[in-house]
Image (cartoon, rainbow, N blue to C red; front, side, top):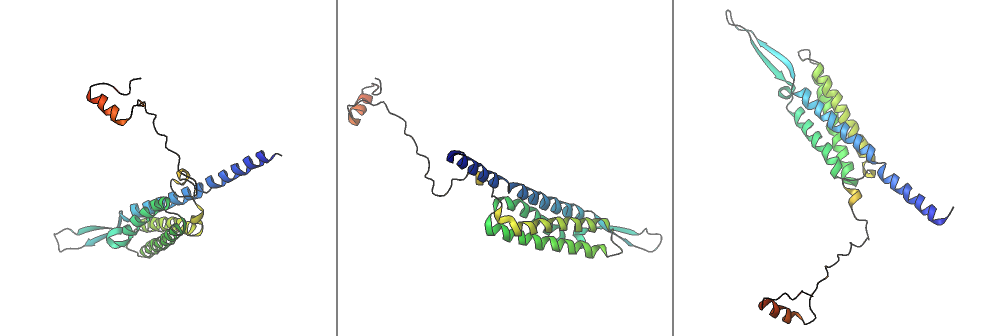
Amino acid sequence: MSAGASADRAEGTGEGMSVAPRRPLTYAVLLCLAGAALVLFAATRVWQLEVTVRPAPLPPIEQERSGGSLMPWLPALAVVALAGGGAMLATRGLLRRLLGGLLLVIGTALVAGGAVAATNPDVDRLWPLLCVLGGLAVAAAGAATAARGHRWPAMGARYERAAGTPPPAVSSRPERVEAAGTRDAWDALDRGEDPTAG
């Protein structure tokens, strides 16, 4: 095998390695966004129906309470997780790993909140369990990002100039100016003549 063919093969392998990590990054972002959206949706549903009995002949008062009203921090953490999923694309290296750790903590808190609410007999268990499921997705995405996120490419990395590569030279437009000099060109313009006419 010739040296040129070996170089081309090595270059192709390197290019494949740079493209391959994009798939885990995509999966992690989608998993985080889906989990956070699921928690946000479940937190806005009716979790509890409070009935206040009044003296006859007044009818009882029914008050619907959502997950966000029972646990106000639940939808707030879901919004932070949504923003964190988008931030995965814009960060890199150590900063992305720290973001993954934060998402892992947020996902764990979402799981804990949903699990505690599911133990309440007065609460519809469907929505807290969906919060648990969404929190697990956020935590899994955060754990994967904290462990391997520094190896994943950043947004727009393929368009960045490699270190040490000089910027491309800017070609100047050729000018058609008479050899008489700059002053003669201005004088010709004052007379209404075109000094570039050849």
